[in-house]
Image 1: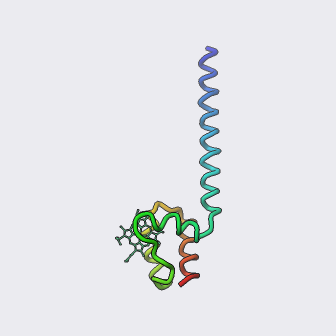
Image 2: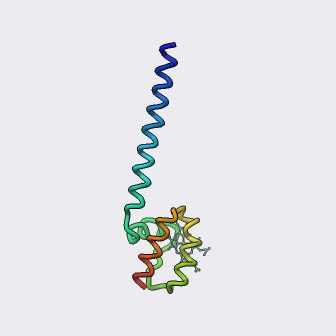
Image 3: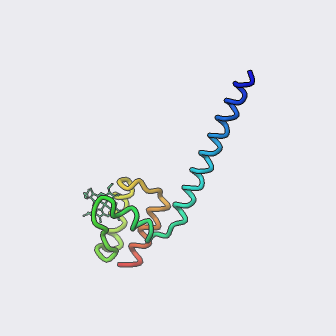
Length: 88
Ligand code: HEC
């Protein structure tokens, strides 16, 4: 009986800990500026395409496609597009 209660307590603590870590990680990711997100994510599979290589309209389309490849959140993709459009 005692050990069952402590197991439940242990599991709850683990769940709590994981949700704190995940919550912290996701808020940290969205705190990053677009330039940092771009540098960290957009050069993983190919050379970093500089902002000047495409027009605003082309960046909209390219990041729409690359967002799924790079597994970015909507917020991260938006920041990257803003950074790219500011620099072309
Ligand atoms: C998981 C791998 C991966 C990541 C991460 C990635 N790309 Fe790509 N990217 C590709 C591949 C593969 C291609 C070429 C094939 C294609 O266009 O479908 C490509 C092509 C491109 C092109 C050329 C598209 C065209 O129409 O010629 C641009 C621009 C580009 N990526 C920008 C980005 C940006 C910006 C990011 C970050 C948001 C990014 N990529 C992240 C895999 C990736």
